[in-house]
Image (cartoon, rainbow, N blue to C red; front, side):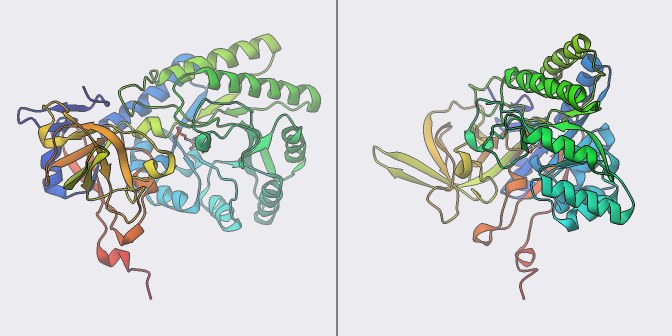
Length: 432
Ligand SMILES: *Cc1c(COP(=O)(O)O)cnc(C)c1O
């Protein structure tokens, strides 16, 4: 009945998340409100960690790609669960560090890391850096020399895999700003270069083929391609690569028609490829890193809005406006992403209409979704948009000077604020 397993209906007919009444949460904390099910997030972490134990003898690390959802509390949860993290900016590094995260388990990504960020990574003891281009390799080598340290580095490779996904979020093909291409020989040149860098401890290779991928074929193809490249590096350069980072990108259920695989299938599928390749080719098995982001937090979250007015455009569509929009969820305006919505205070009623849920920002394209099946909704009702735990809060903005919503974590025992709602004073804090 609902897209995420943690959603249900209580005796009042209200939507619940992990047993908590969402209408009561909206009343207690106000709207718009992000609500995240902490228990589900922890379960997903355990599934990924267990899958590495089960299918790859524990010779790997699951890293939460924290661009999907970043705040201090999530890094504390990741620390407690024994996860690594993937960070892509000074801001994410700083947040994790301030939360007390063990930065040796952080992997630093990005196609244009600044010198300031690279120095920060060194100061904070970030465990691994994934280098994106030759200029960056030179910068890393120089900064390491200046500091008399060595950076542990992986190279980001474009494996050339089409992950059957929206082109904006498919990053493994040759025309991508991320990484070194295999087909052109650019990647092999980069490996030669990194091996020659005295102040770099070259660990291995990284690839990330895209996002919202609902099958394992793309990952298997990428793993195979990466292993062949590892063999080529061994054969031609006599260098044994010790680590392989296969990125993230596992899809989740946003709408009823999405049918994601159980998350441990990712590791099962790639481990088979890597294990058999290593055996057949007499290659030492690499330590494997995986970087799930969306699949760790996406289904765990919902956004609660209060419905405003209804606008009926005869024979065209009906708009229902909510008190948030592209400022708290820009995924529709960016990718026309689909979501499922529920009138939280009428969650046991059938969905009798199709409406377009519009945000309150001054942009025509500011919508949560078009023609979404919904219970009959009146002003003041609470609308829950499901599976918003990933790339919503982390992509939110202050467009139109709207305050960012609060984030509440719920678990089987309690609910608590983990990010406070912004105030108008927060909005003008840096204004002179
Ligand atoms: C975005 C990203 C991820 C996470 O992708 P999801 O689709 O959220 O799982 C992992 N690794 C890298 C390098 C990324 O850019």
